[in-house]
Image 1: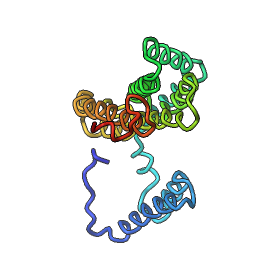
Image 2 (image 1 turned 180 degrees about the vertical axis):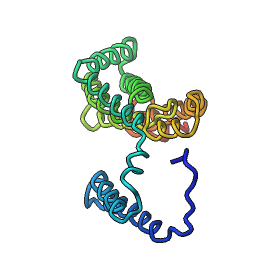
Image 3 (image 1 turned 90 degrees about the horizontal axis):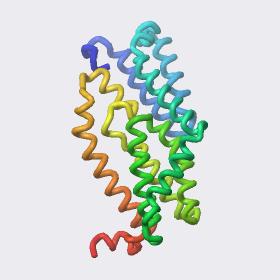
Image 4 (image 1 turned 60 degrees about the vertical axis):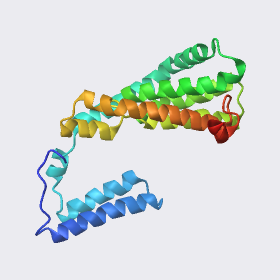
Length: 228
């Protein structure tokens, strides 16, 4: 999209209206829960073909196949790590490393931080979907290893979800990153310079806020403990 010259809207009133209507329909049907967004998107594309707004060969030519191969390759790698037992080894290494010399009362907080960091690193290499496939079971297993109740274990799962979605440092961790990297002429270092500080900010703020909400020591006083 970005590496093609803009198409003027003058003289394209009907087609432009149809395209905007289709976009609104896709989002509206998915948001209302009428159908999954994949189904509504397919119907939308069919409408564009039927109305002559888009030629099938142009639609096919616009697909970034290299990006699709990269995304599905990362998903496959994530599933392979889970099925091969590599994810269980990661859980063992995480719990051993984070808890080896930790005081008993600080174990939930330290394990939460270690889990977030591990997930954040993985999501920069894999996609966010592949990362959550690997790390969600690990987060629950780690919570059970320190005998957390089901209510408290949700903190670990939330930390995993936030970290998996906070991919700013590399162009391959999230689909939109990969797309703009491909068509925008960015360098790998551009993502590192902007994304690494964002990742650090997310890490500190997320772990502290989650620990405050679930009252993990040393934040057992909740949000108020930050201002004491």
